[in-house]
Amino acid sequence: MADAPLSCREITELATAYLERKMPRDQQLAFVRHMRACPICFTYLRQLRVASRALARAPAPKPAPATRDALLAHFRNWDPQRKKG
Amino acid sequence: MTVDGTSGRVPETELVARLLAKDESAFLELVNRHHSGLLRVASSILRSSASAEEIVQETWQAFLEGLPSFEQRSSIKTFLYRILTNRARTRAFRDQRTSTMSELESDDDESPLVDRFGTAGNWLAPPTAWGAETADGLLARRQAMDALQSALEKLPERQRAVVQLRDVEGLSSEEVCELLELTEVHQRVLLHRARTKLRVVLEEYFRG
Image 1 (cartoon, chains in turn yellow, red):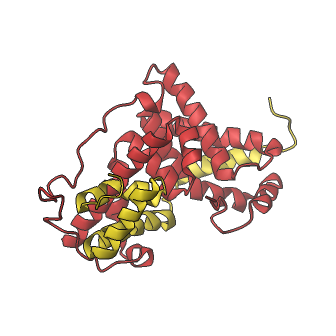
Image 2 (cartoon, rainbow over the protein chains, first blue to last red; image 1 turned 180 degrees about the horizontal axis):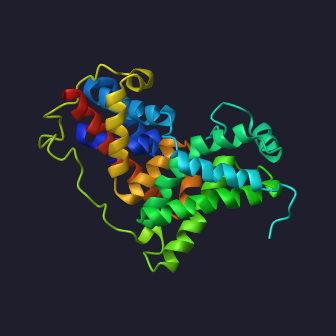
């Protein structure tokens, strides 16, 4: 039954489908109902989101200086007017 | 679902114009922002760090060659990753490695949460608060972020590529499916496994 109550285990299994909004309507309602009633699963979902958002905003590791210099040298020699091929 | 391909900084048309005017700081900014991500995805397709380095170098060269005719129907980021994944796949094929991501195996591992529930699916060992309950809070914890980044590096190849493109780069699932030649369901399964593991790594970090 699609809108039967979901267990905590099921919440963790469906978390990504929920966040991606790829869930049948009935299941989504059951998911939301569980989240309202269960502070543990609420915490779980928040932690998933927080980790994902922090990754999005974390500074990217910079390339090694030698790599950067090689790319920059290429950029300096690059001619934007030259036709491809 | 819209994705801000510009990371909310300089509008992309302006960035492209600066690159075409051979503005070195614009190029360096782009390299600093994307090089490590490109490398991460290249190595997940190629499994050889030497080949991955070469492919990323080639990607930057091809990017510059293609830039004058780039019509900006996609973001610069998507343009870069499209060049990269095409080249990496061609290279993987040439090197007689597994030809596409969908054929790569090694990650149908069991859930890290397997022991956490009772028979009724209730939490036996529930997650507890981290003391860093927002992205800002987590970003301020340098060591936690280091643990998170190194866990990302250790994910199985396909999971690593999907998390890099979805969570780090912020591409849409449609774009990622196209770039990595994955079905939507498969992409979501990989994302799910990866995020589940990364959360557990942070949990372990905060539990000390």
